[in-house]
Structure formats: structure tokens, C-alpha cells
Image 1 (cartoon, rainbow, N blue to C red):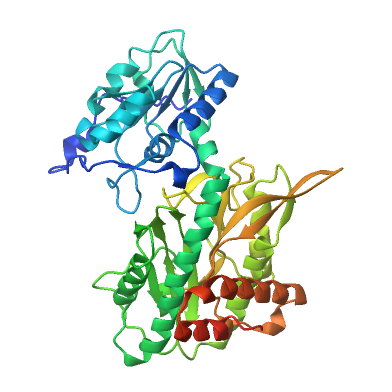
Image 2 (tube, rainbow, N blue to C red):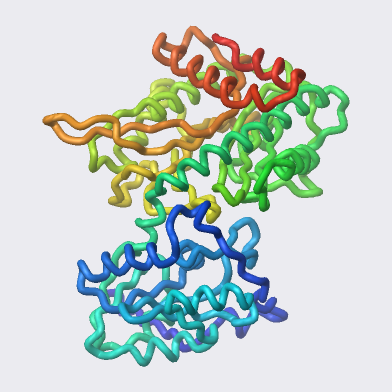
Amino acid sequence: KEQIQIDSSVTVAEDVWEARPAIPDNTVIIHDDKWSGQSRAEKLEMLRREMKRDGVTHYITAALDEIAWLLNLRGTDVPYNPVFHAFLMVEFGTVKLFINPHKLTAQIARKLDGDDIRVSLYENFEAHLKEIPDDASVLLDPDRINSSIYASIPPKCTKREQTSYITSLKARKNDTEIANLKKTLINDGLAMVHFLKWLEDKVGEGKITEMSAAETLKSFRAAQPEFVGESFRTISGYAEHGAIVHYSVSNETNLKLKPEGLYLVDSGGQYKGGTTDITRTVALGKFPKQAKTDYTLVLKGHIALACAVFPQGTRGVHLDILAREALWRHGLNYGHGTGHGIGFFLNVHEGPQSIRPQDNGIEIEPGMVSSNEPGVYRRGEYGIRIENLILAKVKQESEFGTFMEFETLTLCPIDKTLIDKSLLTQQECEWFNNYHAGVYNALAPLLDEEHRNWLKEKTSAL
């Protein structure tokens, strides 16, 4: 319509990016079935059922997390994301994996061959695309491929554009993944307890900085079983830096934490048993009176979403208002989404679901794990965010249909000193106290006496 033409034969980035790093040749690792809950063959069968239903003969993806999920493999090519560089083409008779063969161990190569997965050179991907028969029906997710891939497919092929099958399949966590994630979140909660107590004990010494706090939190996570690495760079924001939603601390901006004001820490871990993402805002000492109101309003929104009951077919856009209403009534808001999907030992941000004011047309389905993270940010003063992970599940069936709810999975105390109880309803207080009781019951048996006593006080009833 706008008379814009795309020339995919020109690779501008390669022409102008001098000394561009080579694609890493790090070795791919096996993601065992005991973590994934489904074998590679079972996942391929699921995918081919989707293809058969829609009359698709070729499924093509360049999305690294999709390839890792389908093949039960992981990698270290991309910081914080356990993926590896590859392309994939799935047909009914064969699967073609385009990858640097040096990345595959002999064991992995044998396993892939046993599942009829043929390995080809990474750089030969587009040549293979051009050989797809003219009568083929090719599924493409326009959000997950580039124009060069699209242009390489013969023009006479039927091109079906829609959300990727794998994007939807991997978003619905199976029972094994959910059970493993719950165990992982106990370990992650233990790391957070050790960190928060350490922070409380040491902040008065005047030696903690935003950077050292983030490194100390990483060390507590690294002490937990099956920890692989962080799921993203920790957002460690003290005072006015907490108001920068995606703040990234540097040597030039690294503030020293004082025993006053608010500290926001948004962090997560990659474990073999799942991916975590949590935000806590804590008072380090005296804080502005206004912050107590702001914090409580954010908490009210967090609780409202956590307690949501909704009919099957509900989309994230329908739920987003629950997390914002209390803030809106006081003329407050936040400029980011309320929730995003979470991968399983994969990308910490994944689709297709999201909880935000913009409608992406995706329904919330059982097994989807999302974040619940409302906040409020006062420029130059402080930021507040409370984030837990929530699991969508069926609540009940009735003559009016299927109704769903969320189960909160994250286990970590929420700072009580910042709560104005007078702003909470009885039901909100009950949710908060029940949540803290669950946190204590899950974590206390695994803590030493000193940390157990600290947690008992932090999770006592309002």
C-alpha cells in the first residue's frame, strides 16, 4: 500500500559492523526428560498433529528458544538465555537441524539421528528453503522469522502466517515442568531469604553498593541445587534508580546503599528445573510517608490479579485492569505490562500470553506461567514493584462454562513495614497472611535456626 519494497539480498549489518564477533561454537547440552516431562519424539508427535490438522507440510523456525524446547537441548550462546544458534525445518518424514556440527557431541548426534533428525550446516539453511516443493504448505510465524527467510521460500508455495505452534505448546507447561518449577522456586526462595537477611544485617555498615548487592544475590542463588546462571541482568535500584524501570547499574551510576529509603531488586535464575523472575522492594530504614501509600496500592493490585477468577477464553488485556484499578483511583499508573510469560529453563520473557493494556488476542490457558508485577515509579525519588510468578489453572466447571484461577508459585516474604493496613480490605489481609504462611511453611524446614527465626518474624500476620 505504501509502495515499500524489501530487498533481503543485502546484509547491511555485515557490511557496516566491523570486527563482528563470530557465532559462538559452544557445545550444546542435553535437557533431560526428567526435567522436560516429554521426550523429543513426543514433542515432535505433538507438533506434527498440529501440522496435520492444518494441512501444513513444512514447519520452519529461526526462534532459538523454540528449537531448544522441541529438541530438549540447551546452550550457552546467548547471555542469560540457555539457547544455541540454529535453524529448524520439520516435515512429516524428517527433521532438518541447521547448526555448526562442532556444537554437537557424539552422544547428542547419535540421539538426534535416532529420532530421524538430520544435521546440516548452518549456512546451508536458505539453500534448503529454496528446494521446498511448489505444492508445499509452509507455516511461518512473522514474529519469529526474518524477510530473508521468507524470500528464500519458493513463491508458489502456500505460506501460512500465524503464531508458531511451538510458541503455544511450550507456553502450556506440563505436569512434570510445573512440579519441577515448584521445587526450583523453593530453592530460589531460600536464596532470596538469605539475601534479604544479609541486606538487612549489613546495610548499616555503609559498604553495600547496587553492584555488590547484585553480586551477593547471585552468589546465594549459585549455592542452590541445579543453578546454571542468572535469567537476566539483575535490576538493582536504590532510591531514585528504582524509578528507572529497566535500570542497568554501571560503574558510573553505582550508588551506595544507605540505611534509609527504598531498594528495588528485580532478579532471576536459570535452573535445570525452571526459570525464575522475582521483584521485591524493601525499606532500608526511614522512608517517605507517601511511599507507604504507594506500596500498599501496588500490593492491592498484585493481590487482585493473584485472586482473579475468570472464564476460559479470557485474554491478558481483560485482566490487566485488576492490577491497576487501585492505583488509578489515586491518579497513579505504571508504564509497563503487568505480566509476561516465563520459559522453562529458557527465556525469562516468552509468549504468546501477556497481561497488559494492549490486546494481542492470546487467551490465558491452563499451564501458562506468567509474572504478576504491578508497580509505581516516582522519578527522582523511588520505584516500587512486587513480582511473583503465577500459574493459570482450571478452578471449576459449571453450567456456565469453565472458570480459571491463578496459583501463586513464588515463595519470598513481602516487606510488611511498607504496608498501610488501613488501605487493605479484610480479604486482602487474609490473602497476604495466607501467602506468608505458605512461604514460611515451605522454606522454614530448610533453613538454619537464625534464618528461620528471621523468616518467622517477616511472615508473621498483619
